Every structure is written in C-alpha cells, then in structure tokens.
Amino acid sequence: MRKMHVLLFLAGSMLLASACKSEFERIRISANPDLILKKAFEYYEKGEYQKSQTLFDLVLNTIRGGKDAEDAYFKYAYTYYHLEQYMLAAYYFKNFSNTFTNSDHREEASYMSAYSNYLLSPSYRLDQTNTLKAIDEFQLFSNLFPKSPRVEECNKLIDELRRKLEEKAFAEGELYFNLRQYQSAVISFDNLLRDYPESPDAERVRYLIAKSAYLLSKNSIVEKKLERYTETVARCNQFLEKYEKGKYNREIKEIRSDAEKEAKELRKRLKVT
Image (cartoon, rainbow, N blue to C red; front, side):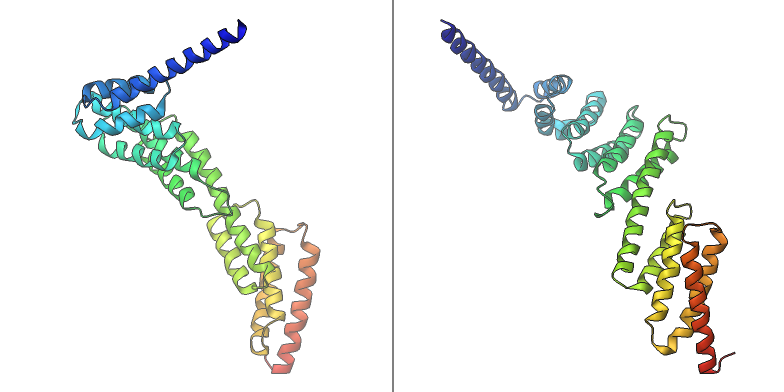
C-alpha cells in the first residue's frame, strides 16, 4: 500500500512538471506578444529567470517605447545577472543606461553594469581587462551621479580593484627580478611606484629596485659598470632617506658600501674624476 502511495505521488509530480513545462512551451510558441510579455514578467517575479529571459528574447524587438519596454529591458538585463552571466549583464545594463536616459532605473543600471564587470574581475595573476572596465565604469557612475548613496561603495570597490592591479604590477616586477632581468625589474618597479605612490609594498619595492640596480651593475660590461654603480648608490640613498629604520637597512647599506667601493676603483682604473 505504501509503495502504491509513493508511485502515485511520483506520477502526480511528473504530471505536474509536465503540465508546467507544457504551459511554458504553449506560451513560447503562441505568437501572442502580449501574452509572452505578461508571462515573462510573471516568471521574473517568481525567480524563474531562464524562462523569463527566453520569453523576453522573443518580444523585446517588437516593443517600442512605453513603460512596458523600459521595465522589460531592465528586467531582461537582470535575468543575466541573476543567472550569473555577468558579461552579458554588464552589456545589457550599460545598453539600458545609454538608451533610457530619463529612466528612474538609469542610476541602478549604470551601477550594475560596473558591478557586473567587478564580479568578472579575476585573480591578479590573470588578464585584468574587466578590472579596468569596472574601475572606469565606477568612476563614470560617480561623475554622473555624484550625490548617489552608491558613490561611497564605488570608491571602496575602486580601491579594491586598484590594489589588485598593484599586486599584478608587483608580481611582474618580482618575476623579472627572479629571472635575473634586473633592468626590466627596475623599470617595472619604477612604474609601480609612479602609478601607486601610496602602495603598502613601497618599502620592499624600493629595496628590490636598489638590489636590482646593484646586481645589474655587477653583471654589466665594463663600459657600463661605473654609470650603473653610481645609479645603485643613488637608489640606496633614496631608500635610506625614506626608511631610516627600515627592515632592509643593513643590507642596503652593505650594497651602497660595495657599490661606492667598486665605483671608486673604476674611476681610478678609467682615470675618471
């Protein structure tokens, strides 16, 4: 008897699922744009975003103007967001913002376009195209809606994204250093300090600049050694001026002392004053 109840329950569930599916299919092939649009909104409100999106797809090109068109395009963009298709969500939110310039939803759509790109931003080790897009769009949002309560959040997210770019720049400089490409390391670290002067890694960056300059000097041809040892001394002095009690001070002072000694010997040998 119990087995029969289970079978009847399963059969009923399958019939119900089949009925629901047939209803959606019936609406989808109905060629009735008013019904399709109405049901697209209903599915959206129920959280059935894939069905809602499918139906919106069928009628969006037939809608011209009016409140229904605005709401449909806005919710259509959100279906991609809820389905975690953030690249398309960013595209459709931005398209909405540019199309419905007088909409009450424009501010939210502009923010969501930027936020969707933020969600696409990968680890700092990977390509940062979406990170840069998100930063640009958050900045654009803040310029367009300077009084929005979302501006503060935009600034926090921009700081987070810029930190990721900074980490990538540091990793690139460190990679050059580890590969013994010291000149490239110096250039890369200099660029990092130019772009992120308040970097929390600035002390280590300046240490690696001085050490890279020193190792570049030691591995240079004779004709370039004097110039590069002189540059090393300058880099060491810059570090020591900024970090009088830094954790790398002892090593930097040793590097400077050796670089000064080598430069002095070279001047004697080359008879340079």
